[in-house]
Image (cartoon, rainbow, N blue to C red):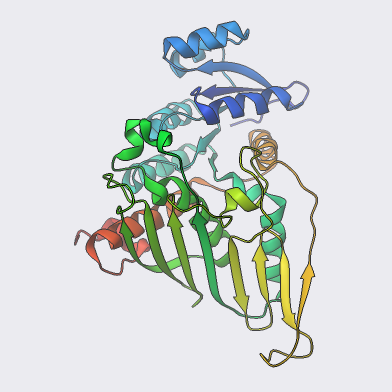
Length: 358
């Protein structure tokens, strides 16, 4: 599949005009290397919004292709449509960026990934936090060995979602809840920083609201490297301890000078996102004074960096940082968490598709 010419902006179509779809449209319009080829969404409201803003609109990718072929497609439709929409792009040989999660179940995701690999079409999954300079620096610190051997890790997602958030019916039903909607980000970052997950044990509860989905979850993770980690999530707890509240990534949330991840090694520990590195003054010894070192990185919008990376992929200059296989692996861990919470058993994500014992 030949790469498009670099002498013109890359024409990128955006499928889906929800909240994240609009952010992608804004990103494409702001990126000098890209141009908005079309907005694709079958709803009359999306059609009217696109036309009001002077955007080319189509109800489907098939209709868009009858007009002209975009260089890339961003799929920002509801989760249950990700596979069908991305498959249309793959079948047409068009590189695709799929919003997280790659699919609403791992079997469908695996089929999509296999089809893309057979066709030689690159797939980038929108786990955009991997592109954040904070995370890239954390990965560099871990890989440098400054922390020693990583032994224990903890992550928190504690927020208070308001009552009106749940006025949307699907947010109260299976398939929603903080595990699937929110922890999928944290799981993906843990995989990026720590490697593959070997086993999962989890519990959850819906006691705060009584909806059909959990409002609180506690997860134990064992990584293939031997690292042990805990993740706790609740969307019913006011707190400063979540990526949303600490990273400053999204201006919609008031930023707090707190951590959401703690990474502990045999030589030092690291708090994220402050990049606060803690070590004993002379040697690892709890009787020795502790020294805090704050590391810094230049801030950048990870969605912008992700789009620039997608442009590189379209032009054949880079391979996806978060490939279809990576998106599938993260989804399998989330499914393992849900299965473990439901059954009370330890679940092995790598064997999920072979494990029919629920």
